[in-house]
Image (tube, rainbow, N blue to C red; front, top):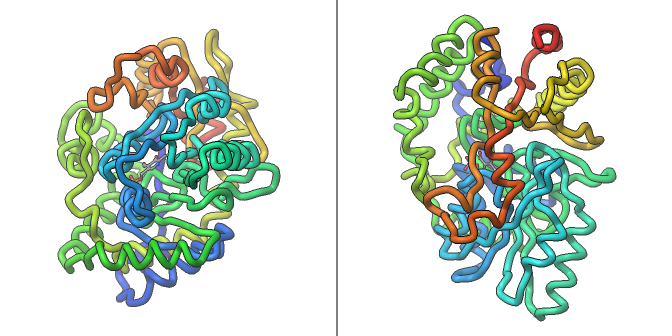
Amino acid sequence: MVPRFKPSLGWSEFYAMLKSNTGKVEEFEQAFAKKFRAVDAVSFPYGRSAQWAFLKAIGLEDEEIILPAYTCSVVAHAVTLSGNRPQFVDILPDNFNMNLDDLELAISKKTRAIIATHTFGYPQDLERLEKIVRFAEEKYGHKVWLIQDCCHAFGAEENGRMVGTAGDVAVYAFNISKMITSIFGGMLTFQDQALANKVRAWRDANFRKAGWMKGIQRRIYMIAVYVAFNKIAYGLTWWLQEKTSLLNRFTKSYHLDGKIHFPPDFLDQMLEVEAAVGLAQLDKYDNIIARRRANSVWYDQHLKRKAGWVFPPIIEGATYSHYVVRVPERKPVVTEWAAKGTHLGELIQYSIPLTPEYLMEENDAFPYSAEASLCTINFPLTETPKTVKKICRGS
Ligand SMILES: Cc1ncc(COP(=O)(O)O)c(C=O)c1O
């Protein structure tokens, strides 16, 4: 079975995991900042912790924060759990990103921050985003924070400009499904040293050092990941995921459907072992992205275009966290491909304002987000060109 995604883990990450790793967190922060053109980077145990901590550190509370309706639900959870109110904006049907015309209409005197997610690795129009923020600040006479969510878009570029370099702060996440992984983990990057210093100081005052047991648990988890994504074992992983609730039980503390919650360790500092793995992954970043881009282009040119299928755009500077095709009916397609030996992803399967935890009266206010949540399938991007060619031949 070809997995829907596979972390690019090899001997270097295994070796990093086994070594004693003092000082790796600072080293990872500095290397990450350099790689993604920031003046500084501050690490966290999860992407959601990073986003939550930023809102707390700048002192936003009981304010309105705009974000896309179609993104990972934990982005909205971070807003809610920081004591603020999410306000959703619909997406564009073609590239899944927040519709900037709708964003302009949604901004009011209550808006204090905008979270711009570069969904599936497609960069937003940075110049327009900045203009919208400047206009709102002049109109309402207060600061409007611009937060770039780059969790799908490490290093994506728009007109030669890297996405994370716009706005006040950029958020990254490193769970095993992301571009590069540090087992778990998150990062904020800054263009302003004073703001980075303020957030780091807030983190150090409010996040605790994790105990040694967590280091062991993370290593066991990582070994399990090596095994689970092994070519031979993945058939069993897929079967356990699809036919039993066993794997969901293990991930319950990380993600719970229908509940606004964070994992119990969301206030731990990033572990040295996580940073060491992240550093090893950073060395591979260029190759990882090159493969994702080449595979996306290959799918675009060789995957059979069935009736009703809408292919995703191929855009210079995009980094393709997922290769997302819209199909009229998702389930039969996923079942057909599983029978052929390829596991297709189904992300993102919800529109946040339609989830039980955020259900709003105006259910039809975000039609493109609702539509995307029902019809998207993702083809594997982390495989070798040989496997991707085989997938296309079987289409
Ligand atoms: C777009 C986006 N933002 C934020 C996050 C949060 O990252 P984490 O799971 O590390 O909290 C994710 C997670 O998968 C994500 O996809």
